[in-house]
Image 1 (tube, rainbow, N blue to C red):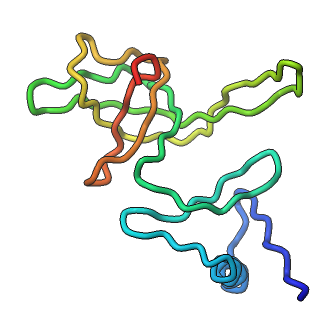
Image 2 (image 1 turned 180 degrees about the horizontal axis):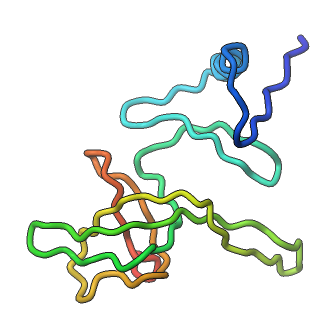
Length: 142
């Protein structure tokens, strides 16, 4: 059976119903099920686009965009982070990588009471809590 290849989308492309229906048909063919508190993630890799089940436990690399305050009692600290990604820049050996900005900012909360909070420019992990709020964990501590 010859299948229509999945469309390749770029930033700024207009999605058409036929494009989305092609993706849905492929998902149904793959019998990809997501279960409760999860979803579908499209991930760009060196070998192309991967469709996978994403759980709320997924973590993403980000960098503090200004200082992020620490928690004060029951009041979480707050701040802004910019999403980052890592790509291979040479095959090596050993391979070389570089971290680059994806240009997408997130408002985050900080549940840690570490004195001084998180400084501008620090790398952090972000993930979502049960209420859908993005929270941070220091890369150095988590």
